[in-house]
Image: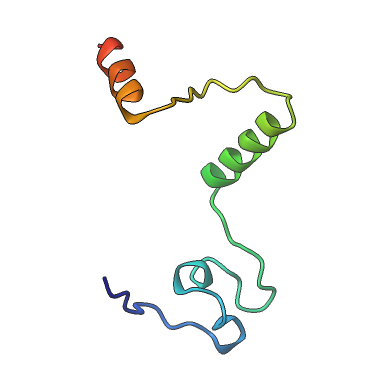
Length: 73
């Protein structure tokens, strides 16, 4: 697989990967994220801090996960 650059990346952030650089402010180098992404990051931070119970399931194998998916129908 070959990635090709599709956006012009300012020299100040050229050391970032092209995908990351696309979302950085060229002057401050801060990430520019939309509200949905910020909310998702905050939700995960709350889960990791124990403020919000996680509703994620974990599985020991692919077969176990597929069986769970089949049972939810």
